[in-house]
Length: 199
Figure (cartoon, rainbow, N blue to C red):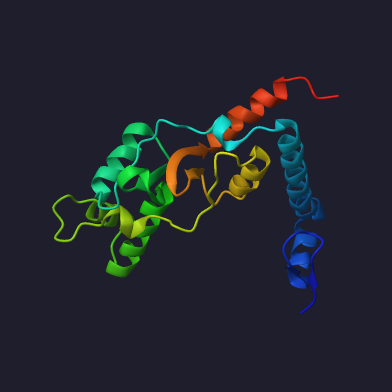
């Protein structure tokens, strides 16, 4: 099968035919939107100059221990409206991050495995009276991107650009010292866009 790579990911000839039938403009528009988005990221990173993770990170963090139950975690997500919750041990030793998506994925998997609806699976997942409660360590992500305080803003942008993560933990020799969220990035980019361009 012939593949075309000029429109982003590999596109099969049959997909190209379908795109032509549906209107090539929409198909090319998708590739153009990706190209424009990538260019905007480069310009934003360039304008941000020497800004680092330490300059934009949130420092007053709400964290959980690896043995925290999912009911507590769900309560924290509701109370603070976070999308990410770092998991730390003694002396802020970083273990991982729980994203709201981890809760949703786990509930979805349980719903499919137990042949239940999503709502009942989520309620069962966060029950405080379970025989073996699900803990933070059971669902946290450990392989996501990480930064150090000196990480340039230009390096942080691509870590969150694809939408896979909403926040990047900032570590100083394995110890959590902050977190950079999408909100932190947007605020930093907005500030830099208001500053005069360097000559």
